Image (tube, rainbow, N blue to C red; front, side, top):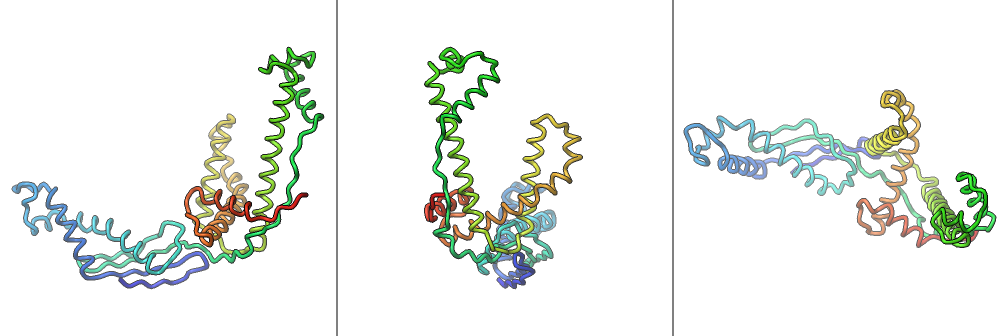
Amino acid sequence: MKTEVKKLDSSKCEINVAVSGELVKNKFEEVFAQLAKEAKVPGFRPGKAPRDVLEKHYAPRVHEQVLKELVPDVYNQAIAAEKLDVIELPQITDVKLDRSNLSFKAVVEVMPEILVKNYKNLPIKYNVVAVTGDEVKRHIDSVKESRKAETLDDKFARSLGYPNLAELEKAVERQLFITKENQERQKVENELIENLTKGLEFKLPQGLVERQTQDMLRQTKIDLAMKGVPRDKIDEQEKAILESIQPEAKKQVKIYLVLSQIAKKENMVIDDHMPRKVMEFLLKEADWQAA
């Protein structure tokens, strides 16, 4: 196999691949052998049609099947041989195949070079989470108003499913604490990401940005539809929605690629759980400082 890699930009490569000889010939023989078992040729029992008859009737079909099986195999071998870190499906063009030669061109998006260095001991400022009695009271008062209740007493607490007012206050305190804790955790993670990506500039692979943008567009349309916005109104807003979500899509792709780079440095598996695992690792390694 011959491969030639041409760098188109920092996140895109063109690979010219050519194979010849036994690999191609054997694939044709393999496909013809499989076809011979299945082909129904008039005048012959299944599996008994001679090769020249199969060639006459099925040559185009065999050619197509060889392409379907051989191109992905050869492409994957080429990627492995060149040690390319491909992150999107390839664009295959200029495919040429005869009985002993296969060649094609593949344009692929690859992981850009990201110089992530000091990702351990990142500073994090955190606030100790606490809930005051006034916050509990304000929350219960707002519930009382929404239910147009006259008094805050045990009967009111029971109407909400609690045995008495004291238990209701404890439950509200727990709920407020969990809400505040989640908000603080989100703030800490956002701060960590900000410190991690600050000053890191690299070209984002356009395919990844486009895919993320389309995913976000689909979700936004679903959210609007569930709020009762008519489909024609949603379609009218599509261009404006795309413009509004593109900066966030680019930001999310950038974060994902930076986390991927750290995952590789730390020998973590790149799968759907990778971003969360890397975040847990970074939080564990961070320099926590009380605000």
